[in-house]
Length: 167
Ligand SMILES: *[C@@H]1O[C@H](CO)[C@@H](O)[C@H](O)[C@H]1NC(C)=O
Ligand SMILES: *[C@@H]1O[C@H](CO)[C@@H](O)[C@H](O)[C@H]1NC(C)=O
Image (cartoon, rainbow, N blue to C red; front, side):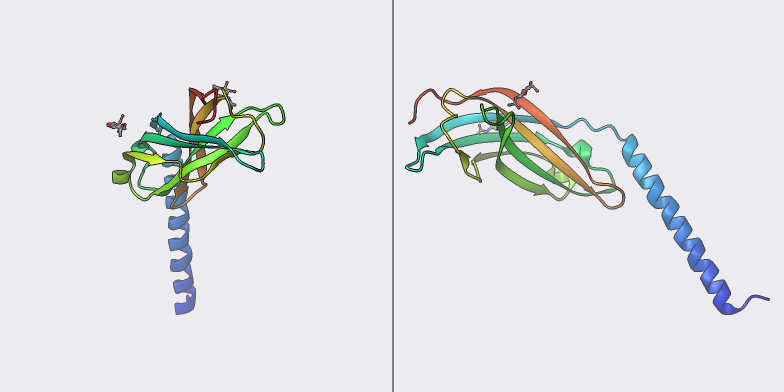
């Protein structure tokens, strides 16, 4: 003899079990999706390159950031956070990472684009390390899923170099 309360409880438990199974399958099928993101970043111009009175160096760049992250989007993708960083070595640090630009991609339709922009965040070195400096531009992304774990990855682009002189 089952009471109404017991039955309702059993139905809720059953529903939650189904939901858990769906969530697990979602994450699983998401992990099976092998994305093939692409990125290309061109430095179109060095707008200026200066030593500040406090001794720090700062450079202003114009970039053409061209990205295709459409393959990151599955039905389990809520949004993707992206940022572009300049990465370089100095005698003090093996890795200096300066964020230059970022954005949030809300949907697959928005995940393929190019943007012509100056650096949104300041590119400053606390020292005099930037003249003739070879650096990488790296596109980092964080995928925020509807269920399951957040994941992150990057594309590294090499072969960039800052000028020998301030301008
Ligand atoms: C930026 O790059 C894209 C893709 O390579 C290209 O179609 C576009 O013309 C470029 N824009 C500028 C301003 O260079
Ligand atoms: C730039 O990228 C290359 C290739 O991935 C890597 O070997 C090098 O260490 C990177 N440089 C910096 C400063 O991260």
